[in-house]
Amino acid sequence: MEFDFVSIGKRIKKARQRSKITQEKLAELIDVSNIYIYYIESGKRRVSLPLLVRIAKELDVSLDDLVFGDLENH
Image (cartoon, rainbow, N blue to C red; front, side):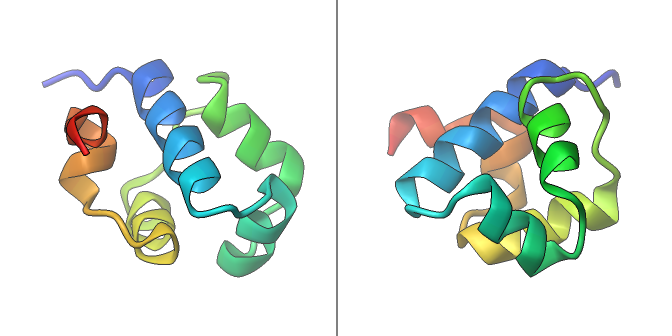
């Protein structure tokens, strides 16, 4: 199965914005650089599973929502 990292990045961005968290704050919470969050959200970098789990936890969304797109229905 191939993952669409551009779509995953867009869903991360949407969830982050809904949570009213800046890229800088999310980066701080998961211990990465803000530019890395930008790259993930823009689909320029692939996000690892462990990091994706941490992002989902900090944004209080399920991993399924980020990976498979159920965020649009909420």
